[in-house]
Image (cartoon, rainbow, N blue to C red):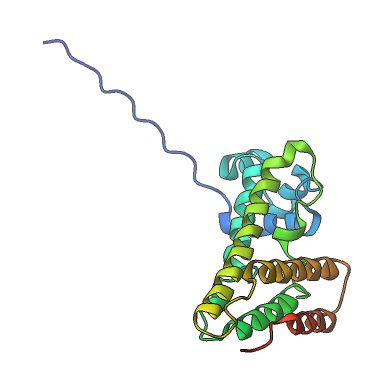
Length: 207
């Protein structure tokens, strides 16, 4: 009987020689501080403490690394609204608390100022249009989350039935974007808290 040779087994890939999450967090900080297009491969590998081949093996190209860094940012930072909505607060208290959290977070001296989702890919070339689209979608999700909370406030009788929740959500998102810009310009925490407090004056009159 003819003997058949077993096919050689594929060698397992070499394990990473660095902590992937630590490297990702460092990449996030670089992108957050300098923006997507201004960040070079050398900036990333230097901050992450790895070589270019290791970066490509672990994360793919620069765009995929950036998008994963954004997801990591959203999981770690209070940029979005879900954590506030989960708290037992009225709609007004939820929005006020969210603005305060943003003011505190965006002026944290241990991290770059502002919101990464707002500032890291605002002025990009056509080659980076996909990155801009992804971030625009995340910002849209934030606005949708705020609107959903306002709609719930209307449904629960906290706000008038004719409240334009879409316009009010857009207003608060505009304030949030402005706070991020102010933070990038080194505005103080006190200034951002005051902006948030002033924005709450636009809250509709109670029923």
